[in-house]
Structures are given as structure tokens and as C-alpha cells.
Image (tube, rainbow, N blue to C red; front, side, top):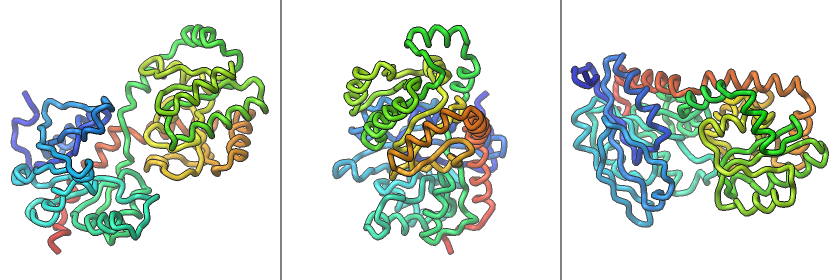
Length: 384
């Protein structure tokens, strides 16, 4: 029997501009968590913008509902009317995106329902006095509750005048259970064969897994590993991924036999190559890929460059990874020093595995459900 057949005490609605595949596990976990607290979850989601069609990252949920979606002015405006759904629920959670103009109608005209916003709360790299950021600060206050991605989100939300006691920090995560199971299932014989196949001769192996684009600082990464290899001749480097700067990787690997480009690896193949590495080289922007580092127990070394995602808050320097300045010298020194210190790697590996237990979809769902119920228990904030 469907868990939606019985009338619950509360009904919650989440509106998503589009549904990505990496959010499906979270919504399933949240639906179950809320049901156990006598709250029914409804989800409505729209269609990706034309420019997002090539990403091939859309998800589906049998119990979710589609939403009319239109884009205007070069996709800077998105129209998704969901007012007909608000009458059915006690609380609605909306994505905090400037382009979602129907949010304003809900925020200002619909007073019976509690209304929460979900997002980062601002842009760390943007001009705080820009029209876009001033608009966001005004919109930020028109809510009864806020769900922030990470601890970094809190000051961005608070600077609009929104009260801290009505902010839930979710610790944004994606489902890592599959990768965790695959990492745990890595076979030593398979690793031996893979090492032989790749021609690896050393245990001092670094890895990069991700996209190849400017913000990832691919050229910086390649310059860094070249200097690391010069200092440590047994250092070898695995590169996994693809993107617009793939030509830089191809050219580099053609000149350096100790650097191996492996293309895109998923599933068990991804877990296997992670098991070959001691460190994760990622001098560019960090996002949810930090969870790969934690789950695999392979410490990430990044830099204090601009543009990191909110998940950079999960990295505690010296405990579960390293962050250096943006100086090439500093980065090379940090990686080289770490590779030469097995005890330091072991400590960071322990920190990674501890963090992997904290940043999970299950924990995120529990925190989200806590916030939903707490918001419903308190008087409305927008009505004051």
C-alpha cells in the first residue's frame, strides 16, 4: 500500500526548478523521514533550461509531479506557476534562485502556508552592492525558515537580517552508499591487475577526478604534478574525467609517461582507481566531489582559490584534507611533504572516513525534517 494513502497531520511541498538524478535518493529518504513524523511530502519539479539539455543529469520520481516551465530573456527568467499546489499544503520549500520569479508571488501573497527557502543564501564572490545581490537580500527575508547548504551559508543568510534561530544547516550531500560499498568491495587481485595494466611502478600515486574546465585550474594542476614528480621521481599521477580543457591533459600525458589519462570512470571502475591513490590533487574549485575523497579515504589537497562550492566548509585543514594558498610553490611543497609522511597520510585518511559518516543523505534528510517540523511549530515570520 502506498505510504500516501493515509491522511497525515501535516503536508509539505518542495518545488524544484528541475530534478537532477543526484537528488533522487535524498527526496526518497526525506519522504520516509517526514512520513515517520506524520508529515506527507509532495514534490513538484519543472524542466531544465535548453542550455542544460546536454548535461544528461535529469532524474525522475514516480510520486513527483511535473510543473509547467518557461524560460525568458536568455534563460535569466524562469516562470513556474505553482500557486494551485499551495492550497493543499501547510509548508512549501522553494529553491532560492533569482530567476524563479513566481517565488515572489508565493512569498508576498500566500500567507496561510509557512514558506521556506533552500539554497546557499548568497554568492561569496559577488559584489554585495550589485542589484542582483541587493534583490536577493530582500527576497531572503520573505521566508519563515531557511535551509542552508552548509555552515558557510549562515552568515550569507543572516546578513539580510534573517534570524539565526530559523536557519537549518543541512550539510548538503549526495548518496554515497553505492560508492562506499564499492570501495569496501575492492579486490586486491583486481588492484594488482589494474596496476599492471596502467604500468604503475610506485605506491606514491596521486589522482584527479572531475571535470576539465577553467575553474578547476587544470593547467595549474599539471604544472604542480610536474614539479612534484621532479622532486619525487617515483610519483605517478592518474587523471579521470573530461571537459573543455581535455586537450591540456592529452598533451601533458603524451609528454609524461608517469601521468595516465583514464577517461571517465564510474561505479566499480571509479572505486578501483581511487584505491590506487594516496592523495587527491584538486587545486581548483571544490564542490560535492569532496565526498569522493571522504568515502574513499583519499585526502584532498586544494587551494584557497575563488569560486569553491559551499561544500568546501567540510574540509578541515590538517584533519581531513589540506588547503594551501594559491601559490604553486606552496601547493607543490604541501603535496610533496604529505607524500613523504605516511603517518600524516594515515591521520588524514582517518579524518576522511570520519567525515564520510557525517555528510550523508540520511543525515541531511533528518536535518531537513527537523527544520520542517520546527517551522510548522512556530508562528509565521512573514506575517509580522
